[in-house]
Length: 121
Length: 121
DNA sequence: CCTCCTGCTTCGATTTTCGAACCACTATGA
DNA sequence: TCATAGTGGTTCGAAAATCGAAGCAGGAGG
Image 1 (tube, each protein chain N blue to C red):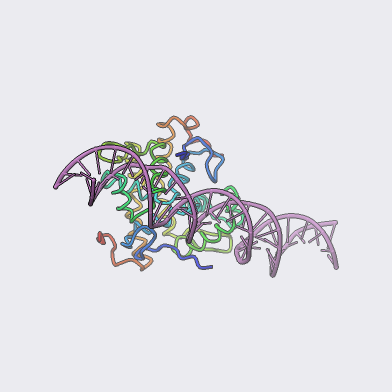
Image 2: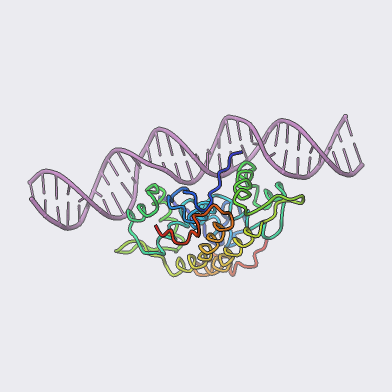
């Protein structure tokens, strides 16, 4: 399963420069990537469970993403499912202001379900 | 040009919940979206210039993304090109730890061009 | 043996993205 | 006036990414 993940230092889609942030933007800009990291940060999960949590994302893409993210050293498979690595945890942490921002977004665009933070289902 | 952008409060790909962060993940997980925001945060730009800065991204996708982002109140067209709105600026700010993270990523995975922070070109 | 769970792989259908060509409009300048 | 170049796009066929149902192999329980 060739899954050439973007890596810092290597030219990626849309950037010859190899600047790390461009590689990150490429990697994260693939469907489900951020969602997978997000879900795993809540709790480790096996393949099927991850698929369930992500509203039945397609198994083929999940395989690809897991390969990419593993190759990028952001997660690692263990006996009880996939875990974020230290680097993966750091990434999610770096991304965490997004949650607060999105609530402000919801509020200011007026499309949100009231506050939006509680809608845990 | 129908460009139904994800909005907080509305079910999006991969999430029925309508939770704002899921809408954000959907929006940002489309190709070039984060890159466009990133570029505009450096400096406003017109259509063609934006296209040049993003290594010749396809004009049709650029049109679509600009519509989506405009619809999401993240940017607005002005006489001298597209600008981030306040909300758009906030989003880029929320995303900014990513730059620092990516350099650490480059360093720790050893694939980076040395430090990686200077490759401004 | 049967059933249910797991982690995947396969493959045809659908959606997204690409990218070159093209259109209309506004200079600039010879 | 005629060209040349720049702008902001649109169009459309081709290529790539994603989808999703089906299937496979393996393990556990009954």
